[in-house]
Length: 157
Image (cartoon, rainbow, N blue to C red; front, side):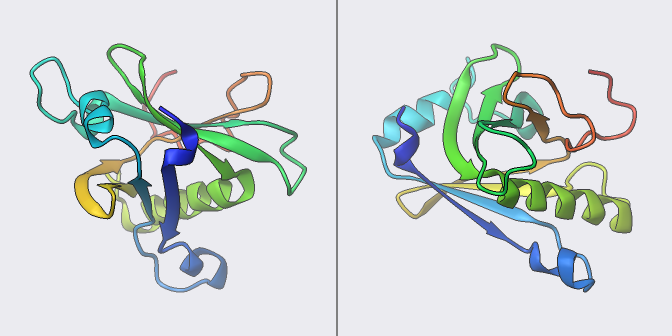
């Protein structure tokens, strides 16, 4: 599935840098490719849409973390099989701001299960919503950046 089939939009992160009341950050992913392809990738062996616990979200940086122009690849994978559900390109600084907002939202609300929300749409029509608490960040060499990742307490990697 091509990365340019996806559009990414982030909501409810402005409060994080403006010291306003916390709101759960949301990332909206809209898909503009063959609908059956995305539906199949989001389906488990039983044909049902995978649960949030069955999916992992990550960012792989494509350049140095210190470069504000660095882009990255946001991936959603099936936790059981390791298969990619989707991949899309994004500005790393925007994704890292999103992760920071999700971390602060979790701290300020004691929200462990849903620090952020992922809304997925197919051609502007709602498909699925997932509440997530983990978002892993990897550098250009594939090493986990624990300090930049969103990892709930008690989770061993």
